[in-house]
Image 1 (cartoon, helix red, strand yellow):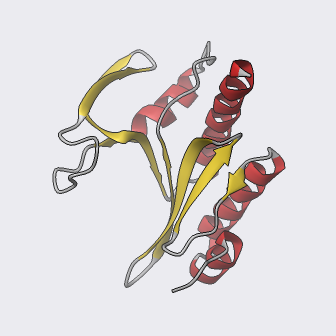
Image 2 (cartoon, helix red, strand yellow; image 1 turned 135 degrees about the horizontal axis):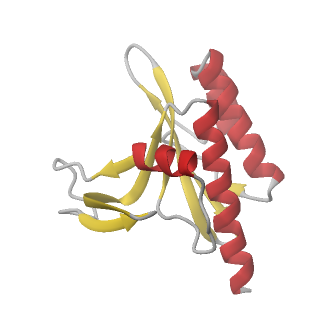
Image 3 (tube, helix red, strand yellow; image 1 turned 90 degrees about the horizontal axis):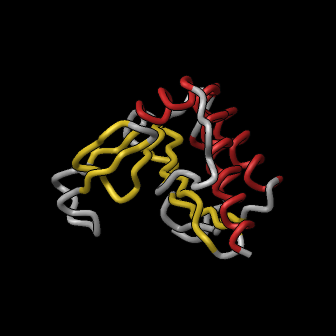
Amino acid sequence: MGVMQIDNIIKEKLTGEAQKNALGFVGFLRAKGVMLNDSDNYFWNAEYKGEGLCVINIAVYDDHASFDTFINDLPNSWNPVDERTKEIIWANVRPHNPTCHGKCSPGSSRVILGKQFDNLCSSALGFYGPDAETVDCMKKIIDGLKDDIIGKA
């Protein structure tokens, strides 16, 4: 398949709001100094100072494509978090898929922003086809994760 540039794939596979949201998120990441690797399989790892922040997937199906993003963790430095942000995060908690035999099998339990979740994937948050408000929440998470990395230095 060869190396794929994320911008080209977004423009080729997505339309409308999905394309706008994906390009906006990728532009935000680059403006923040986040590196996106080139891909040969529709998955792009986003890293800052060598540490992973998220994985972007342009999921291509027979009848449509989707902009999906997976985030493993929330910022340690995040307090307080407003209720709407909590609601968006809780709505995007990613359960373990029983057909997957990845590193999180059989799933784990965690408290996320004060709420208990069981049977979670190792990528605890999965944002599937996020709308503009959800993308704004994703940006807040990335900013917080970057602050954590900077704080370690």
